[in-house]
Length: 214
Image 1 (cartoon, helix red, strand yellow):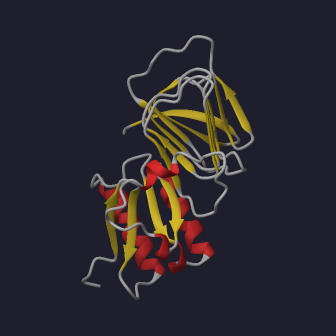
Image 2 (cartoon, rainbow, N blue to C red):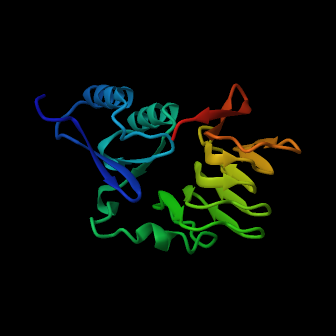
């Protein structure tokens, strides 16, 4: 095909993918793999990638989620009618308010644009991005992955409803406790602040923390 098979559109919520009409899944998967391996700057670790729900079968969606998760990305599906219009930049801010009361199935990612102080809790069924710090005594509980654009010193629980592919990323990962799905890891009594961002995920049945490039 001469036309680009996978098209990428950036937004404040993340990257939205669209596909040329009539493309076979094998062609789409190959094009995504080439883009992931090209290092073109679009797919930074921890970025939310949105793919249309109605274009693929359940097995195909699972295959795409696996590809993106292996690359350190957060992959969520969205229905075509749920795609936000271009001027809807304030949508993530509105989503961040009713976290505890919002069990709705269409929420893909919560974005919180402030530091979470001790005694505060963020609870959501989706993934969550914190643009700020998570202070000691604060808690983040998410059904998906957690991305903290700051220092994490509180308790963080990703994949809280059983998602073993969920992960936790922070610029400085120094939590009192990390949970992913049903696994728990506690931090040592004394931790030094690292110079690089870190990613916690489940590997071989245990939580592993690795340095990453933002």
